[in-house]
Length: 366
Ligand SMILES: Cc1cc2nc3c(=O)[nH]c(=O)nc-3n(C[C@H](O)[C@H](O)[C@H](O)COP(=O)(O)O)c2cc1C
Image (spheres, rainbow, N blue to C red):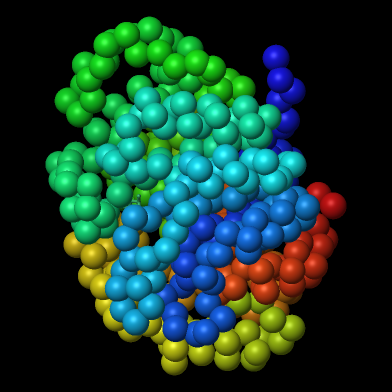
């Protein structure tokens, strides 16, 4: 049996960190600034190694099949997340490597085999982020519709996926969305009974889905106070099905030596140089097909959409950013992902300055 490394998602740090969407152009920003992230493979590999050496817990890619238009066609370029995960497994030592998989677009038997491959190649560091999708133009490309009940479809997907990796095969599956006979898959994953799972949602159906299927829910929040309410709701849903669930959130970050410098850069990339066409398109599609944010976020926070598709902004000095993280940990978040305009240029300051302050604040071990 191969050696199994501890998955950092279950490690001792009180507030865990991930790098989100470095596999896609722009990261999560919708901006025209020339230094925006281009998602060149060698840069992605360099960032993965940097995060790995720094002890950051996970890499989380975005699953995207088509861009959002505008001047930059934001997210028009992205690497597929299962093959991205397999490649990064060979380039890293400790970090957990998630793949983000669209349940309606990728068959669960294929996904189970691919994730088992990454889990073996990484000695137990694979993770699955299940998403049910919302971008209609992507479904149109595949020639499939969005299910009336996307989480019922997602739950069937999960049962097939998890059944294979748990070694329950051969089994038959007779669902509304998936059917199969004598379903098997070997090898099973090194992590038992399956690799760590996360799902990304905000709506009440999405939370119930996470409660049944995931070790972590990946979700947004508008203000730290409302975040506390959401966490209580999510934990209650998990408790109702006899499970516990960690909650991660997602932030866009501008970290600079001075507060003024950070705010000025945020203003530049997310207001003055925002890709207005991509922001309009993204916000309209999200409002039509997803419930992934508090509704008032769309009206109040256009800048947050340009800055990081509606996620929470961490803007300021390393000290200020850690103060915010202390509040997030205080209301019960297990951690956050971090996304910046240019991962290769900006991650070093976060590693050198923010991580040590997190240790001082009791959020992480040295
Ligand atoms: C933090 C976060 C990350 C997400 N990442 C992706 C992604 O990579 N690809 C995708 O198509 N959808 C992604 N989504 C969208 C979800 O899959 C889901 O379709 C959307 O949140 C709507 O779900 P809900 O309204 O049921 O909560 C993400 C959502 C959240 C909240």
